[in-house]
Image (cartoon, rainbow, N blue to C red; front, side, top):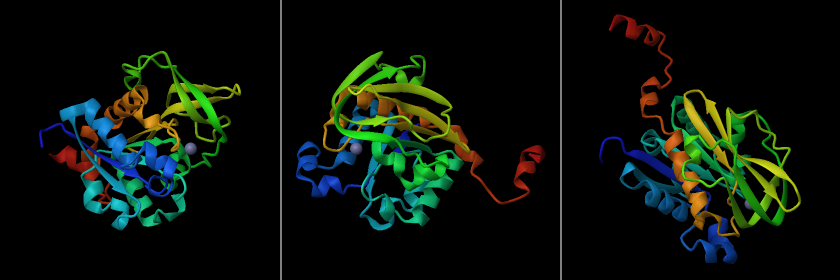
Amino acid sequence: MPEGTINVTVWGENVHDRTNEEVKSIYPDGMHSTIAASIRKHLGDAVSVRTATLEQPEHGLTQDVLGSTDVLTWWGHMAHGKVEDEIVTRVHQRVLEGMGLVVLHSGHLSKIFTRLMGTTCALRWRDDDSETVFTVNPGHPIARGVPAAFSIPQQEMYGEYFDIPQPDELVFISSFKGGEVFRSGCCFTRGQGRIFYFSPGHETYPVYHQAEVQQVISNAVEWVYQPDKHRYATTSCINSPLGWMNS
Ligand code: ZN
């Protein structure tokens, strides 16, 4: 593959997608396939995108797959508890080493996100609403090409208080019919790794087919990607910090 290609792995829980007729009608090949296709469409030759799902051996996240992943995206909801702790530890380690992570919607309660945040990541929610996403950091790379505000006609309400640490940067804030507000686009750094959380994406609505949402996710893939960080892979070798002085 060409040098500079971002290796993206789109992880999907893929449970609603197979068991709920409404979700199947919106995402016949699963949400992960739609998300993967949208990243390919927006980033073209700059990316190589594959998918992985919960039911695969090691949830599709083997050492080999993660070792060659620059950016991982994560959507999960009803089966967070079925993700093996060993795999969560593996993903966590890779984020600390510099792998980028984009966590979507109900992924806020995933094992990997709550472990990285160190808080409950709980929030207020209500079904059957509409969302307006406001760009509050228009100069940020994740806001590139994204309107000052855009509507998602059907969406679940996610509202404050959202129990996360203060984000390093806030890119989007959303509001809802009930007047609630929510920090819907948040940047974090853990170890060498960049993390972006983006809340739109309830499974029974066609949110991942929407152009603005696809643009944000694709921008986030580019932003969390840090090609120069991989050489700082964490190590237990005590001599390594001195190696550069002698070379
Ligand atoms: Zn939802």
